[in-house]
Amino acid sequence: MGYLSCEFVENGMCFIFDAVVLCSYSMCMKFEAIKIIEDYKGELFDWEKVKQIKQEYRDRFAKGDIPPICVGCPSLKEKDWSGSMELKYILINHWENCQLDCIYCHTHEKKKQLNKMKPWKILPILKDALAKGMLSNEGNVNITGGEPTILKEFPDLMKFFLEKTNIFIMINSAAVDYSKWIKKGLEQNRVAVTISLDAGTRETYKKIKNVDCFKKVINNIKKYQKGLNPIQNSLIGMKYIFIPGYNDTIEEVKAWLKIVEDLGLTNIQLELEHHWYEKNKYCPDNVKEYIQMIVDYVNEHKCNLSYREILTTCGYTEVIRHIANGR
Ligand code: SF4
Ligand code: SF4
Image 1: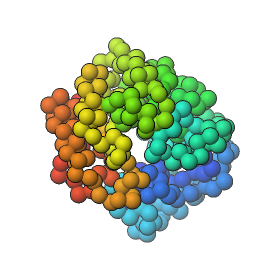
Image 2: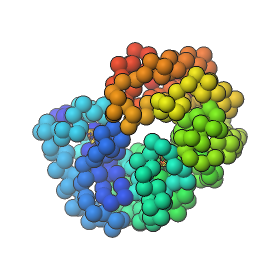
Image 3: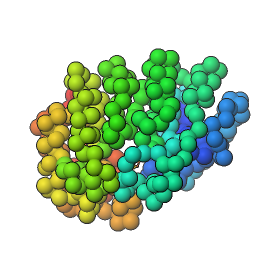
Image 4: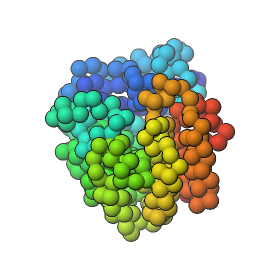
């Protein structure tokens, strides 16, 4: 019989720096998460115990006892869940180290301290999961952090996922460093990388990211694109996070769109900075106007557009929606 649940409850596992949590969505959208294993620093699991813990959550959802943090989550679906305990949806987010210092990042206040931290190793856990039949051969992994390309284990992680599984790899990267593993994954249609430039000019980029790497990032995007076919090119996501007071001017948005056009990028992503939204609870009129401009661009250039659900809570669902122009 069907019940309301989500892929993370049923088949997911999310690693943060000191715990395993139920999902990443609640962390991003509500700044909290349900910890299913606390004080965790990369120890190998007793998988039977993990299954028991996860089963308790599944039973809770099956009974309709949805945790308050999950109420209204767009990931909830009513269906017959398969019952399989294999991990299909993994979030790797257990380090905070990054070359940038974005003003909106949760790491901003403690940057120096967080950049000194040494992340624990995750590959042994994944290898163990594969050996014990706990890792599905399909599904997806989201490698986020911090900056993935500076994680010491990153090349080994990529090699593992690309060579030992069919898992699709989603990466959030600042693209300050070029990674041959990201390129390899793009060439194999196995990686999607999202780069949030958030600016159309070097000055604004510097103001938001606190480093002067605008040109370097654009050059790295060009390197990733070299030799890719249109489908592979569409695996490179270009994001603009609107941060009122920083990058919400027509000149900035036009300059960013010009970069998108010059590079021939077709996967466009928008977001309203969520701390700002949490405080203000509305989408400013000028941002709505720029979003409409981007929607027009997307339609004209047959791009794909995706947006974070947060924009739908701004009463803007009529204009902002996922637009897939057949790519
Ligand atoms: S329902 Fe939403 S918030 Fe709850 S665990 Fe699933 S994805 Fe996370
Ligand atoms: S690139 Fe990401 S992890 Fe790095 S500072 Fe910016 S938001 Fe934080």
